Length: 229
Image 1 (cartoon, one colour):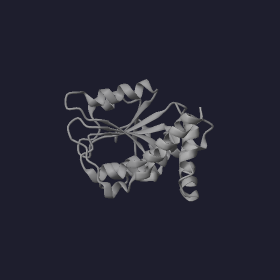
Image 2 (spheres, helix red, strand yellow):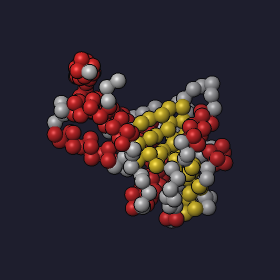
Image 3 (cartoon, rainbow, N blue to C red):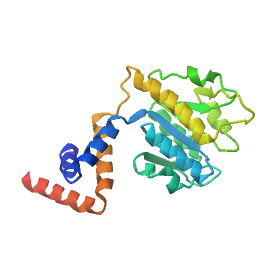
Image 4 (cartoon, rainbow, N blue to C red):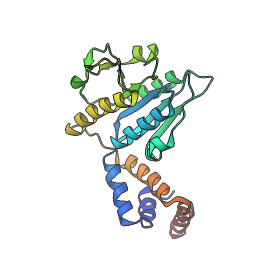
């Protein structure tokens, strides 16, 4: 099998220098020490805004869990961010989708963080302590489910000083992820992607940037590599 580093470098030769540089710069800032879980978000513009927030803050993985409501994405709000993140969907009508998502997070070593007005941890006190954190945002109306609240290791409250009962879900997620992202990036913890993860993501992004020419170019590079062996 063709080495991924060789394939990636050959494909990058077909990008403009500006696009190549941008892909490498963004990949260097990506992390999997934080992820975002969206549980039964109903409004498609909120899903789009949440994906956009994850991309902007360098969060690579978003888990989209549908139990009661079918998730839909507003492309205009997402601004193309769904192309640059790794979107993992749990949407089977026959399964406990939250439990499937929770099992996957546990297997990868994540602790669960939920936004809760009655949470014991105030946002300013929420710190990254070395263990990957998955921030779960619940439905716009019902909030986080009882199952997700019970499974969470951290329940975070965001200070409020007005009459309105709660923040919009995308705003609340942005506040929590910004707090954690800042703390993580200031820490001495190894928060960046592994070399293999970075190359895999750069390869995916490069293929998307190349558009219709991507697969013919890839096939040609792989064929030439095989012939040279």
